[in-house]
Length: 96
Image 1 (cartoon, rainbow, N blue to C red):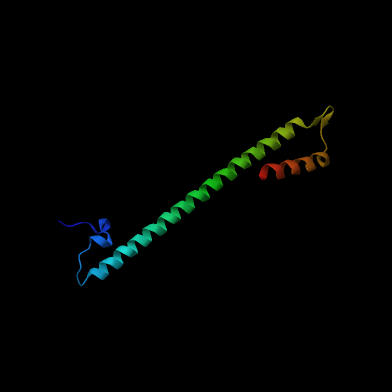
Image 2 (cartoon, rainbow, N blue to C red):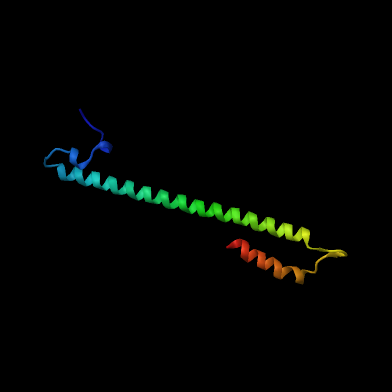
């Protein structure tokens, strides 16, 4: 019965003149698989960080929108120079 090369392990191979060739092929395949698995894990982590950043940006935008809606003088909106330092503070806090 023949086994596909993908299912072979170095211990499954018989001792023969081509044994070393097959062992190198299998070792190379295993290294490539391990490298791809590491790459997949790295990409998944990067995606999680990016999603967290997007969620934080949404919180930041909502906080600024709420601030903008609530900062109103009885006779009209606050002057920009009064709001900017507070907006910068909120920006720093929500981005951390």
